[in-house]
Amino acid sequence: MDMKTLIDKLEATRDLTDGEFLALLTCTGEDMAYLAEKARDLRDRIYGKEVYLRGLIEFSNYCKNDCLYCGIRRSNGNADRYRLTAEEILSCADQGYELGFRTFVLQSGEDLWFSDDAMAGLIRALKDRHPDCAVTLSIGEKDRPAYQKYFDAGADRYLLRHETADRAHYEKLHPADLSWDHRMDCLQSLRDIGYQVGCGMMVGSPFQTPECLLADLRFLQAFQPEMVGIGPFIPHKDTPFKDSPPGTLTDTLRLLSIIRLLLPEVLLPATTALGTIHPTGREQGIRAGANVVMPNLSPRGVRGKYLLYDNKICTGDEAAECVNCMKARMESAGCRVVVSRGDHPGYRKGDA
Ligand code: SAH
Image (cartoon, rainbow, N blue to C red; front, side):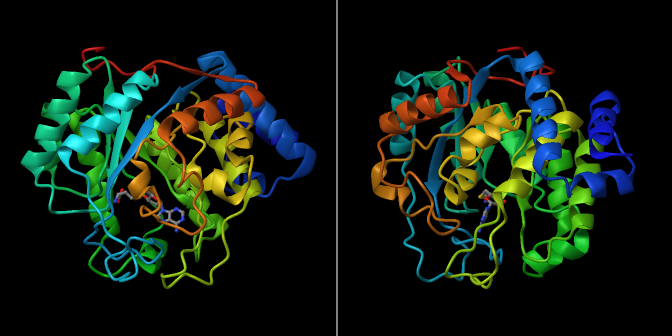
């Protein structure tokens, strides 16, 4: 089968054989342009030209974990640690609300200073102030009662990248005290509780093979997440992977398009990491089928400290500048950002 026939088959059936997926993961040039066009058209049929904005608040870079790829890993003594107060977090959200954000993503390292009750209180305060907004959490692995507590406090969505669907690969990226099974259990708990769930992986992470990516695609098909966060791996100078090559723009764009065709309604961000490896990476991500962007709302004073990888963009800008810059970028990609919660079309939780 030639590449275009494969792409048509994926669009029509949302499935391919293992061999066909592996072949598609190598497409380039005109074939990749055709893949992007199909993905973009499908995105347009479901979402039109509307791109959803998520206001990212990176509220703590303390972390108890030691993931080998991550710049805020516990053993990085050079990381300049900070945590925002509840008041600072709420004031970021207030500012974001004025700028048109209707989803706030609270992201952090796994910082035990924030107890489960403290998180629940923060979520409740955020929902009280902005009842028309969605709250997304991205705070790592917790136990099921904690996830339930946050949900009961009003959290709507949870991002927990699975990082890799290949257990042996997972073990090469993480220290022995983190387990692939636990991460997968967390995703299942989040799903059972009723969150809109996001998983995802880095593209081009150390030791990643085409078979790892095939396993990722099979996992996405089985799990049917509402959101998928993918971006290129980018080395951080103070980690064991400092000399590993970054993931590429082409590989990331190709995967974005494949994921759009696999999960037509999925909420798919063009990530900051994609914007970091190429000046127009996020625009190209949108053209490849993505439909979400996540500008940073963190206070200027701490932005330069939430560094998962080197050369992160937008660390010196004010939130308002980021929004205006993003609007212009999305227009150049043929889209427009909208003021909306931007739920997954299949989402029914009270339809708030
Ligand atoms: N502690 C939270 C949030 C992690 S940061 C959690 O465990 O979910 C969000 C994502 O950034 C991670 O899931 C990882 O996929 C990505 N990331 C971490 N280090 C990175 C690097 N060096 N390059 C690119 N992405 C990275």
